[in-house]
Image (cartoon, rainbow, N blue to C red; front, side, top):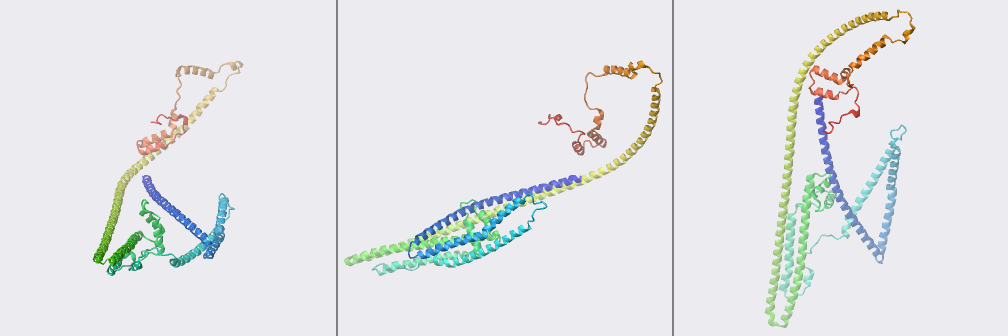
Length: 561
C-alpha cells in the first residue's frame, strides 16, 4: 500500500513537472515571437538608416568633387579630403592592431578545439588553463579599448553638440512680430487707411501670441522639462525605439513597450507609461504650435497682399481724385468701403480662427475621451483576468482539498485493511508453522519408512540374486536359443499392440503441467484465497513459463480484434 501511495505521489510530481515544462515552453514561444517581430522592426530601421547614410555620403562626395574645382574653397576641401584619407589609414591600422589579432586567436582556438575534441579526456591532453588566461587577457584588452573608444565618442558628441547649432539653422519656424518693413514701404496717400491697415498686423500678432500663451499654459506639464524628467540618453533611446514601430504595425504599443523594457531595464512599466503620456502631450503641443505659427505667417502674408491691393486701389482712386476733384466724396466713400471690407475680412479671419480653435479643442476632448475609454477597457480586462485567475486558483484549491480528503479517507481504509491483513497474516503464519511441523514429522516418518524399505529391498534383491545365480551345467546349444526375457518381451509386445490406441496423442504430461511455475503459483493463491484479487492478476501476468515459447507458435487470433 505504501508503494501505491508513493507511486501516486510520484505520478503527481511528474504531472506537475510536465505542466511547468509546458508553461515554460509557452513562455519561450511568446518570447521567441516577440524577438522575431523586434528583429523585423530593427531590420527595417537598419535598411532605412543605411540607405540614408549612403545617400548623405553620396551627396557629400558630390559636393566635395564640385567644390574642388572652385578656386575659393578648393584648399579647404583638399584639406578635408586629406583628413578623410588619414582617418581611413588610421582605421585600417587600428583594425590591424586590435581586430585582426582577435580573429587570428579565434581561428587558432577553433583549430585547437577541433584537434583536442576527441582527446580531451586522455591522460596526455593539454591543460587549457593557459589558453583561458590568454582569452581573459584579450577580453580585458578589448574592454579597455572599448572604454577608450566610448570616452572619445562622448567627447566628440559633446563637441558637436556645442558646435553644430552655430552652423545648422534651427528647424523651428519663427514669426517676426510687428509691422513688416514691406508694409512701411507701401505707398498710400490716405494716412487713416494706412494706419488702420498697419494696425491689423499688431492685432493679428496679439491674437496669435495670446493663443500661443494659452497653448503653453495648457501644456505646461509637458514643458517643464525637455526630456520629461529622464536623462538625455534614456529619452533618446525611448524616442529611437518608438520611431522604429510605425502606426501600421500590429500591436505597436505592446511591441515597443517590450523593447523599451529590454533597453531600459532600470525603468518600471509605470515609468514607461508615464513617459509615453508625456511624449504624446509634448508632440501634441509642438504640432499645435507649428500649426499656429504656420497660420500666423499665412495670415500676415495674406494681410500684406491685401494691404498691397488696398493701397494700390487707394492710390488709383487718389490719382483719379486729383485729376477730378468732383470725385473726392466718392473716393472717401470708396476708402470707407475698402476699410469696411478689410474689417469684414479681419472678422472673418478671426471667426475662422475661433472655429479652428474650437474644433481643435473638440478633437482633443474626443481623443482624451477615447484614451479614457481605452484605459477603462484595459482596466476592466485586467480585472476580469485577475478574477479568472482567482477563480482558477480557488478551483485548484478545492480540488486539492477534495483530493486530500479522498487520500485521508483512502489512507484510513488502507490502514484498516492492513490491520485486518496483519491479523490474518499472523493467523496464517501460525497455521503455516503448525503445517510445517506436521510436514517435518511426516518427512521424518517417511525417512524411517524409506530406510526400512531400502533394507527390505536389499533383502529381496539378495534373494533374487540368489535365484539368478547359475546353478546349471554348461550347454553349448543354449547360445542359439531364445532367452526367457526375450520370450517375455515378445509376449508383452503382442499384448501391447492389442491395447494400443488407433492414433497417438501428443500433449503434456501431468508432471510437465505441475512443473510449470504458473500452475504452482495459481495453486498457492487458491490455497490462500487470493485467486480473484488484483495482486493475483498482476502476479500471474508477470510470471513467465520455464521455456519461452517460439515466436512462430504465438497466436494472432486476437491481435486485430
